[in-house]
Image (cartoon, rainbow, N blue to C red):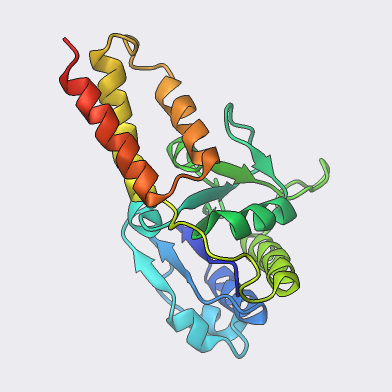
Amino acid sequence: MPIDVRFVLLRPRVPENLGAAARALKNFGWEDWGTVQCEVQDLTAARRMAVQAGATLEARKRWASLDEAIADRAWVVGTSSRKVPGKRRLTPRELAEEALRRGPTALIFGDERSGLTNEELERCHALSTLPTTAAQPSVNLAQALLVYAYDLRQLALSEGPGTTGPRPTPATDAQLQVLREALVGTLRRGGFLKDEGRPAPEQLLATLVRAGLSRAEAELWTAALKTVEKHLP
């Protein structure tokens, strides 16, 4: 498929959701998925729900942290109905269309009880939400994952293999975090970042994320910022 997407489930609690998620991913041909700090120990119920998708369930990756799960991703999108200043909110279709252009994408789902934390939302480059009604805004974890898996597959099939053409290798999230630290250091040493609570670094970095930096561009930005920082008083 021309879309490279990874489904990441944070702290899933309900075994049936794991099984249903595995089935949904197999339904629509997605294999790159896994969990962070999974709270499910007994997979009996999960295997029962993963009809003909037991291998997909067993093949899921286990990451120790969100950082580890998204380190090699170019674009990170969290699923949440919350509005966060500075974060774009995309529909599943809009997410799919941008993922096609962005390259390696991580789609993050929070736990069934409380979703994504404030810190996890800040780690995401953008957010996506389902257009649910006010009468019932909450969506089951596995059902939400299925909607995204479907929309992503629909677009992937319409594009076909190789139709997007060659493009520069996009910067990974790990590279963007290094760039962020260089940006913070320069802003702080230059006297711009006097209030540590200001969201300026995230807002400035967001413009670079939207530009879709390549790995070479991210390295150049980082090197430039570190060089400037060294020459500041």
